[in-house]
Image 1: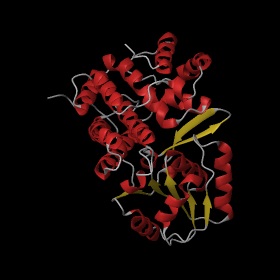
Image 2 (image 1 turned 30 degrees about the vertical axis):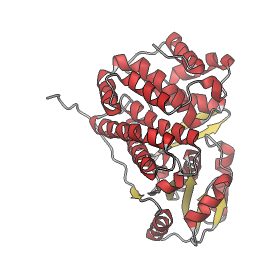
Image 3 (image 1 turned 60 degrees about the vertical axis):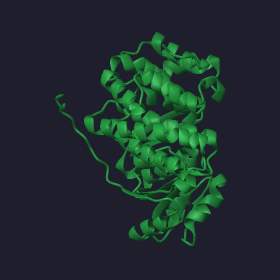
Length: 355
């Protein structure tokens, strides 16, 4: 029997309402429980009709629809100003990770509670992590003010996601799991959550990719994404997330696709130095080897493989390595040199299998 190490685990307080086809009912119930009378809705322009369906006849004070990836500071300031002007007493975010992130940016300075209604598998709704981009630099932090009070999960709302984005979003959730196994505050509790999340997502991904009409696959993906995010919120940002935050903020790369592409390279880099994490990952994937199992899964769902395909220029690789190296966690299981980091990024840029 293995000895359980000394650890300090914090569980975040949050209500989770899960049910396909129940978003409108659950949102009304959550709004009533918070005694809110002047909610502000944050939903991208492209999600207007979906938001209307979820809101139903719920009275709202104002809507904000200028949602952009990586939460640019200008949009955050504008949304904060509108919330103050209209006396908002609640934020309702309906959309993906960028939408939830913008609502968090408002909550960070106003203290307003959030009801999050996710339409992707981003997981931001289950964490107290915020991120804002200014001058091509993404700053992240943790603050309990940004943790949504209630999350309303409804797999029906993910049906409108294109197949490619569904796959990338679920793979982004996988990245939360794997990074949680060696992040600075990794512990047995979030490792258990992350392992179950990997199993759920590995089961869900082929279903989401091959049978997008399947509600069961989407429900399992949401379940896995939630567990992954809870694990990530506890464990913190590991090497994988530090890399992707720099790439996303500095070079404006698409969030989910970037995480999907980088993940197998970080796993291959760390796995030989993190045997317990690799063993857990392999078992959850139903594979004998974690790296091979992950690569096989990503290939089976035709996940994106190369950073050059999502907008990163070859000439940006050196700058990326220079920006990432100072933020590599000291606790990473394998020491990271500038040369090794450069090789990892080039492999991810080319879509070459890392050794």
